[in-house]
Image (cartoon, rainbow, N blue to C red; front, side):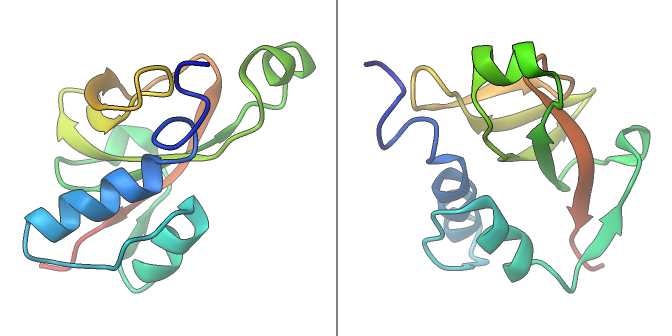
Length: 117
């Protein structure tokens, strides 16, 4: 099934890891959202989506709606902000990095991490 195996639903962390590697700031080949957050735990935590800036690492959590949980599954997600309320992150269905809106149907924004100056 398209997007349901690696790279797919679970490869967003690996995609972010690869972007960091390409930017000469390796954090390792991480396969989980929690591992990405842990690797960046010393970075400033941004608690409001309106305060996200380009370059921030954005995290999403599953929405609490039972209907959306059944429709979308319960998966955390991670990507990198590009500006204009957009991010680049792994697409759940194609398994490829793509540009997306930060606001999502299946997940909600809990925080982002900002690189140190």
